[in-house]
Image (cartoon, rainbow, N blue to C red; front, top):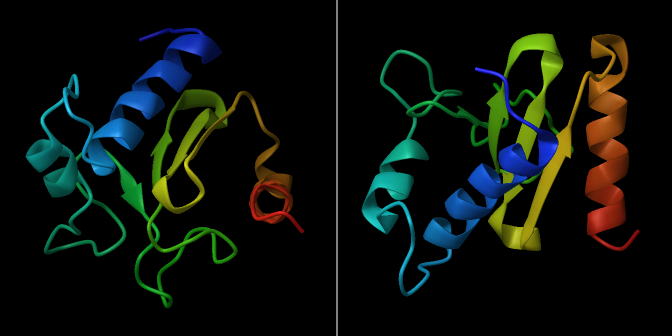
Length: 112
């Protein structure tokens, strides 16, 4: 699938609104809650999203344990952070700098 950064952000926004319990979400809130539950074989993966819950298994230790990440071809990343009420889309990031980019964005969103 090939979609624009704007469309990636829209998908992230649907997940964010569902996690916040929006009145009329496009995707049922209970489904989004289920997406954020770790699967039995991989605590860092939910249903179609990467999770950051387990401190020992976090892909991005500087990001909140509440976040969900959608990771795609070319390193495209959609970061959904309900705690910061934010959706961040990264396109074609250099994988050697991914942790640094996530750390800097997390700090900027947190106000520091």
